[in-house]
Length: 257
Image (cartoon, rainbow, N blue to C red; front, side):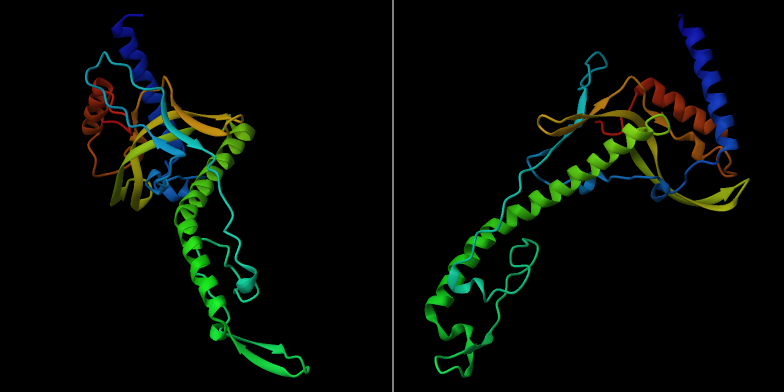
């Protein structure tokens, strides 16, 4: 297939796509999508890696894998000594919560009388708490990050399950170039755009043996979300065409250099 024919096919595809976008208004707000994951929210944890492609020249192949998300290991809180276990307030084993103990409690003495006991009445109990609290803090700091990473992993588990069930109606995209703009539509009047404009289709894979999700490049080229601009009164069509031509020539990937 020669270049001229390829160019005419691309032009026809663009025309049909824009005609379809006029029939079905574009999603102008990122929050209106079924699922949105901000890579800025990816925890800084060894189980998460983002590979931004850096190409020195146009002959160099870009890496296939762009995101890797393993299921992180989580651990339990160090067990408190028996001397303080019954004094600890709820949520002591949650790394996101501060640890605390009851300052006083009522007990029965040998005569069966009720007496009020203070936590700090026993020096050994106080010492045990300080030692254990230091151990717990050393555990809690990395554990919070690991559990955030687990939550991030579970988001992709949900996405993977949804795509398996409804893959024919859904596609996974990476996006950048977030545009926030209050402008006017010839169809809808005053509108607000709050959406990325540089998109690329990607593929999500799951390896249950690890377990791990990976997101891979596809043959689909990066594209300008031109549907955002089709019905806007303040946008010149030639300006959008020029930007699309520039993108076709340079192929800027959303996660790229």
